[in-house]
Length: 491
Image (cartoon, helix red, strand yellow):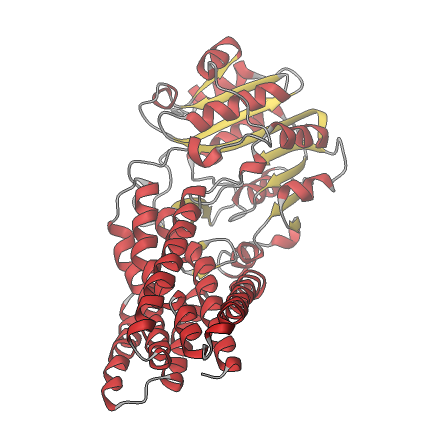
């Protein structure tokens, strides 16, 4: 094999491995979310595939014609790549809700084999190129460098361009076909090699029969809009594994329990038109509610995912021109907003079971406090399940920054018998908790108001979250089962 050809092949194979590694998070997200455990499973699986491929590829190159072996590895790696979406989408819904175990299983079944096959290309190319043992070090070093360069190229091109420009499954399909084509050109010259092409052709035929779980794939989420079977005027926006927003035809109607709790807090604590900052836009249901119920209010919406903004406009009919929408990370964007401007800040920046940990810490809440007017209120929607380690840690964090903090949740949440959305209220002036509790009782809400010593007792010895220690993914407990599709959290 000519050195130039060997360099191009190891570059291509290694680039493909890293393309798949980055796309793995996108493909697994609808079933296991985007958590630290998910990425740990993906990285561990791909590294195991790289190690296995390097070892077995070297042994295979000592037994068979290495040039032909490179062709077989590319064709087989392309076939394994084309098999990833059907494997993930068929097996994903059947896996246990033990997220670490499910993530490892799904990553292993989908990504170990293509990573191993493509990583075996480098030792086979070394064997095909090496003609003089005196130059072993130079050949191995050079091809290893080109393999690493390919991995870097795959990483940057995927992260900065491919994910934003194309759908994940489109990229996987094109990549798989290209890898098979390279295998045919490089080493599949015999008549019996045609049998190797049966698998990728069959896999391409299977793809249309496997329904992709996403209505729309954004840069960050697998998003889908599901009509509510009991209310024709209600549509639910799902992000990855959980419902995120419920959008009613009537903007004054708020469907989810946590959303109604937020409106309860706003109506009790704040009067007149408001200046509000929303950390997380999603379906824009709550900013839309404020616009409809408090004429003259001004809202700034911080949304990291431009795709969700487009989805809200095109699929949900939201007039986002009524809000000042800032697309970007909320922690960075918040620092650019004026101090003491907001009467209300609402934190609602999780999608599925993925929580941006840097929006949960003492340092971030200090930025929120600086942005609030002296009489302003911070309302935080947070999701957790027994033993509620994340909810307790966030309560401790709020108590560290704000003078007055309250928690709104059903009694069975507080007692550790159930979980879901916890709503926190925080301010640097006394909260109107008695009128708030009376309002909840009057409308028959399941939630109660907990504050003062009772809240401190619930928190116990839990430590606040800080930038240097915020293990949110480990503290957040996933639900034992997901809500039925199309139904939000019950009232």
